[in-house]
Length: 364
Image (cartoon, rainbow, N blue to C red; front, top):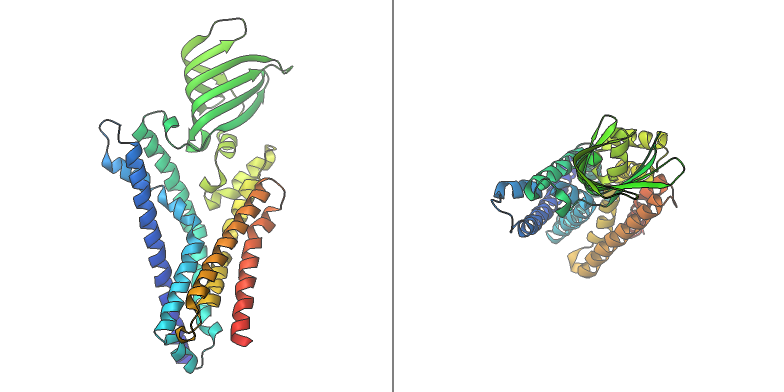
């Protein structure tokens, strides 16, 4: 009986893994196709367009998009797996062999946990690196100034030095804030009085200075002055700038503790990075919660009917869980909720809901 149970457990685990990978691959290809078509549409008027460059720009952007919908891939894959097993009466055979529902759900839970660990430790860093590479390709595709591309701006950063205060605005950025585009700088003296405004096509952070390219300087009671290159003193380091300009989703998992530490030492808000770190830590358990939800709505035998309603309820449960996660994320970034509670609350709600529903169905 132990041998039979072990073989069935491995069989169910591999069927679940195959269903999840098929769902993930299908969504990945769909997102890649749609993004490629959209990028080609935006690049239609560009001369000497490179189809390979467009393809790489679109492809490298897809992993970060699919990372966000990985829990839904697990939910869809688990429901598809168990519905197929139920339709082919393989669940009946498993019960006849003495296995309970918990025994043929546990392999999927183990696989989901391993998938979550892989997504957190490997897939997330790779997707963050590819996202930055996609931005470089996009800047190369649309010209040196990627303002027309999707830069995610505007961005703001504040700096102080012996000369006073400066507020820097940029429409878009690359390399997590080291290179800025569509830049406007407002400078104030130590008494807080406005002194000048500088507009530049681009700005590059170098040791101790911002190097502004194609700058126009507006000062009080004087005509604007154009300079091909203007050096503006700064006390900011690349780490501080990256913390200000890099969104939490673009920071690899292994770098998040450093960004949190830098933000705390600089007196900046680190709630977004703390939430992202806790969210990635909770990802394996969120995938396991999705398996429990899927099992609770997919183990009903086809001859009993009502399968369509159960599937719709599973999809609705996943959607409501997604809404809850977005609400808690916004509350955390607004510092109205602790990042740990915001990241783990959807996991607890989803896991307990699936566990209780499955427990009621199987054990009364």
